[in-house]
Every structure is written in structure tokens, then in C-alpha cells.
Image (cartoon, rainbow, N blue to C red; front, side):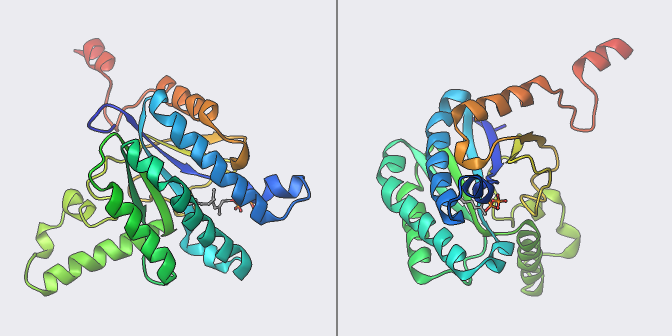
Length: 243
Ligand code: FPP
């Protein structure tokens, strides 16, 4: 849970391709509708008690898709930031892009940096877009940063614990997700937030991402609230019952 008491929900926005295929449309149109779903979901999130949203926009594995689709996904991130940045900034949204910057086009790098710089002091809501992100790559990068600190003589191997390791991840400083949602009926984590998912509730929703919106997010949060969270320990009730 975030410091402000709001929930952190992370979403694997899946099913854009199938949504389009079912309508006889090109996959890229599914992604375009996916941006609209993202916009609706971000807008509705604060009223549902969500204060951080992390979405999987482009994975390190997505480079294997046809060049036209890769370039469409890049263009969509750019178009989304260009059209929504003013409003996001005005509404107090802090935008962060998770993932590797290497390999991204200069215009994409520029737009990412612009969005982050413009919104860095915002505190009302946090939007993290995982883009060119892979959970394993993020763990490797964190390990490398720590190893480099050791090589420079700034840290010792025995200093490393969970807290220090976490401080090298691209999600450092952000409370881990309470809920990870995957849409479209698939039930895999697909290299998303591998460290951060340790205690998250997993919610799978049978809706293609382009059809998603605040009602679906509210349902996911409702599912989360109905589950008991134990963090590997016991609940207050258990302690009272056993003495
Ligand atoms: C999965 O659908 C979705 C993606 C690979 C990308 C998600 C991207 C967006 C919602 C739009 C643009 C992103 C941003 C950051 C503004 P899929 O293509 O794997 O669907 P399928 O499994 O049905 O083929």
C-alpha cells in the first residue's frame, strides 16, 4: 500500500491483438484502442482508491514482433504522452517510465525524459509505464549496479540485503504492487515485476484490454479487498485465537 493509503495496481494490458482479430481489424488498431482504455483507467483510478498504476506497455520480448508493430507501439507511447501530458501534469500525476533506455529511438527517449521532468514534483497520483521493460533485465541491471559499487570500493558484498538490493531496481522508492492484474484470460506473469510481485494478489480478468475501464479496475480492487493478506505470517484473529 502506498504511503497515502491508496492502492498500487499493476496491469498486464493483454488482448489488444485478439480484440482486433475478432473484429477483422489489424492488430495495430487494437493497440490504439488500448491507449483509450489506458486513458479511461488512469482517469477513473483515484476514485477507486488507487494512487499508483503501473502498466506494461512494451516488454523486452516485444522486440520480436514485426517491425511495423514495434514501431506502432513506440509511436503510440509518443502520441499518448504528447496528447495527455498537459492534463496529466495539471492533475498531479507523476509519470515514470520503467525499463531499459538503451535501444530506444532518440525521439522516444526525448518524450520519456520530457514526461518525467515535467511531472517529477507531482504527488497526487503515480503512473509508471513499463516500456522496454523485463523483470529479469531489471534484476540483472540492479545486480550489475551493486557489483559496480563493490568494484569501486563503495560497498561490500556482505552489505547486500533485500532493502539495499531493492534500492537498485527501477521501481526503487515506490511501494510494491498490492494487486497485479492480467487481462484477456491469460494467467502468466510474463516477466513483469518479478521482484515486486512477491506479496501481490494476482487477479486475472476475462476482458480484452481495449474493453477495459474503471469498472473493471473497481472489480479487481474488490477482488483484492475480499482476499486475506497474511504476508507469510498470521492474522490478528489467529493471534487472538491461539493466545
Ligand atoms: C498486449 O496485447 C499488449 C501489448 C503488447 C502492448 C500494450 C500497449 C498498449 C495498451 C498501447 C500503447 C502503450 C502505451 C504505453 C501508451 P497483445 O498484442 O499481446 O494481444 P494478443 O495477446 O491478443 O495478441
